[in-house]
Image 1 (tube, rainbow, N blue to C red):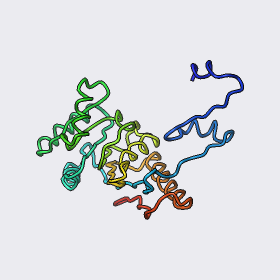
Image 2 (tube, one colour):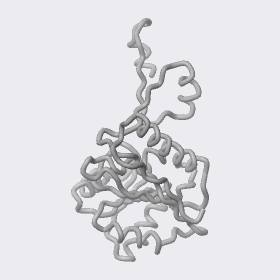
Image 3 (tube, rainbow, N blue to C red):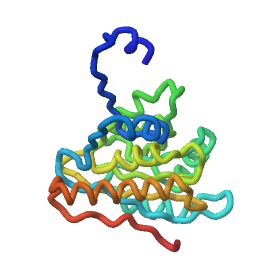
Image 4 (tube, rainbow, N blue to C red):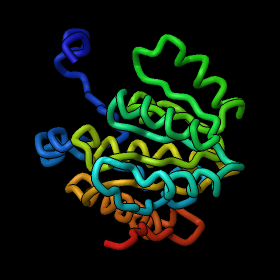
Amino acid sequence: HRIVNTAGAKSCHWIELSATLSTSMGTKKMTKLQTPTLSARYHRHALDGFVIEWMRGDGFNEDILLTWIIRHKSHSVMIFVPTIHQGYELKKALKKRGIYCDFTFSSDMSKTQKINHFRLKKLPVLITTTLLERGITIVNLQVVIMNADHEVYTTETLIQICGRVGRHPDYPSGDILFMTHELTDSIHRARRYISQKNQEAIQKGLIDCAMPVVRKRDE
């Protein structure tokens, strides 16, 4: 911002773009500025909701996750973890169960190669940190968020991760699984945001298909 402020003339107009307005940005600026929003994607399909499965203790319901991965064996599956340690542990556990997968994170020297293999369908399951929460489009992607109640997952982060699904017009929808110990405020707000955007899109005539239900289990 400092460089932009220096370069701009005093009388210039500012346009700020954001994939997800942060809470601070919203409270400080939305009351003062006009804030147009885009409520739908270019392919005119609704945003996908998510399913919740409960985690118990320190475990991650290995059988539930394994069943989910097998059910989506014809798709690409990206699993988000909150810490590097959990990523390595999950990779080890899945490989013991016969799942071909890999793990990448920001300081991983091989991350570009792993991501390329995932794009090319040479790697069916990619475990990652929030490194890949935004800026990547994978065709026919399904997503799991482990420990979705972890503090690293803000509302904006959860929305961005959900937004990895259904980006391609040939595969405009997919499955999103939250595995969590509890329903945090961030999870509630992410659910509400997705529902609100879909409702807005329907009212504005921006989507052509029925709105998906933001689902939950055993709540």
